[in-house]
Image (tube, rainbow, N blue to C red; front, top):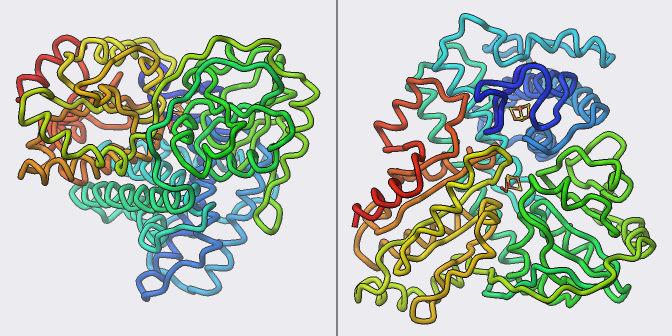
Length: 546
Ligand code: FS2
Ligand code: SF4
């Protein structure tokens, strides 16, 4: 196996024996082959797009779900991958019939998948990232960057589609971009352009997801959330999916169950359509990497709606459930019925039987719900505060959290932000400091939580509106972006920011192993993208910009 798609990759280079995330060589190889097959499907699909046709939405859904399945910490079940691989071959064959001869005779298009898992595994090396040893390292790097950006896009696309929202532009882009990664005639410059288009499509899909979430559940508004536990049976909902949470809340109401959000579900408390359920009682635990410790022997159930899933310990493997594209061998999976509904009765019943927490813990509340709508309702106040010198600088400290050392940089950074500056947060990296007291500036909270990782779209809306108010562009604002990355949604987020021309982003805790030295140099020269150093020095450099 060889995988270097996430920040915790072994030795900062690549996982070759077993994924640091727990991915086995078998799963890694099946995932390589699945991506290879998606590229093959796209070679045929691209011909249809060139003829002005849109790709059949069932095929788009398959491509999107398969990409999402291979994202870090999503699915570790070999049977799921084998079944997706078989479906990929059927789709490829169907497209071959429809499209006929194509010009791109790459192996991705001509390859035929064998029947059994062991035969598939024998073929898998040809789909490996490092298979073509002589490939130009910059071409390899850009191709992989595009694929990882697409994986991030697929996670957001999946979430929006579950609510009935999609973008034809993004749906076609999956195919166009995957095909581009098979085309040996494309130059480094052309692949850089495709990488920027990946960023544009990441922005488009996040916009669609924002529409899906806000039109379905209302615009988030400031809301206090208890982060301590309450007595009674409970279900913890993790991942990112608002619709699953809504279905579970609806089915569990009046049954004496408390529902807690976990990880990236925290911003759900800001939405009217979700906070209206009184048994959405609070938020449990910290970021994803603490789950094994925090779920250990827990007297309740857990529902994983998307990543980040870690190997479940025996002490809770019988009470954790997966849904959507998430999976782990031996973990109960809640599938979708034909009408799109899900039956959560088993997890609800088990939570009741487990009995839950015995005692309440003294409440401790934090504030969430500062999406673009809520934050911009304070726009006049913010502009006035900047003009009068009460607010000096804004810091967006956002992105994924992770288990590796070095991430305390983000806590130190937030703690040292001067009192006349505002901090905006998004994604699970906020758990490093979101329970600390930051106070306010003239009634405006100093810590504004914008939302999940996809809400980088919201952050962009806020920045663009503020730039308008100050008659400048986003790069002219007293704003610094301090980004932490872990998995491929963060890659999509970063590409979205770069595609808008946003400069001087600080990225850490380490730089992606899949960026070659030349690609990195290009990003640093063109966008001023820079690795984090230490909190004190970086903070000083940001403030000098004023
Ligand atoms: Fe955190 Fe994991 Fe949100 Fe990432 S819960 S690292 O998926 O996308 O952020
Ligand atoms: Fe390693 Fe990350 Fe790939 Fe898992 S997803 S195998 S940790 S690089």
